[in-house]
Image 1 (cartoon, protein in one colour):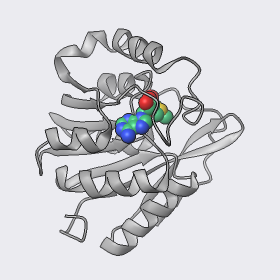
Image 2 (spheres, rainbow, N blue to C red):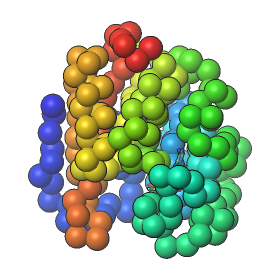
Image 3 (cartoon, rainbow, N blue to C red):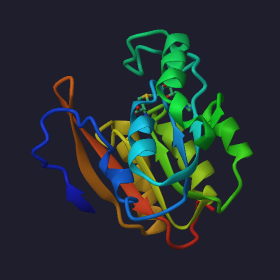
Image 4 (cartoon, helix red, strand yellow):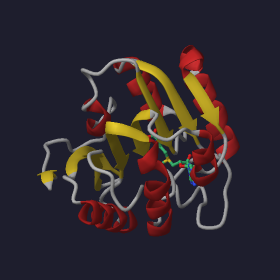
Length: 197
Ligand SMILES: C[S@@+](CC[C@H](N)C(=O)[O-])C[C@H]1O[C@@H](n2cnc3c(N)ncnc32)[C@H](O)[C@@H]1O
């Protein structure tokens, strides 16, 4: 594991997070973000990266195992969705909104078509396992699979198992502190075909 867990960033970084920061020298990127919420992170990478197209995937509904409270959102998901559309209105020609849960949305995305996936939706173990199993095949070889909140138990366990099973290198870097808690991005580069394809 290439670990940069101990960064100096003690407050949340209001800019592109480190995982997608790895793509600064790549061009005409096609990607997907799972869990968009207010579109805050999307607004950073749409500004700072050369994005041709991004699938923004979020059902904007509460369901079993996912509530606003669990997601630590301040507004209703209906209000959050409106804020996201307003925030990102300058980038509409590059965005394909998919208002569905990630599992359903995966059926609309072709295999071997994405340069990156950034996963920040439901942080339960089962949901992370499901997203990894459904989205790894969507990446081109050399693509970046990534996400937030590696410090969450379910995220860490699912990512660690995947990395071990497929014998991949895992990268971790701090994204600053949120509500007194250090948060982390994780990412891997797609190499070989493995169990998850
Ligand atoms: C932590 S927020 C995302 C924050 C965003 N990535 C950012 O950094 O600006 C989590 C979001 O995941 C969404 N979500 C929950 N379950 C999901 C699922 N199964 N598929 C896709 N999105 C989901 C929620 O509706 C919520 O808006």
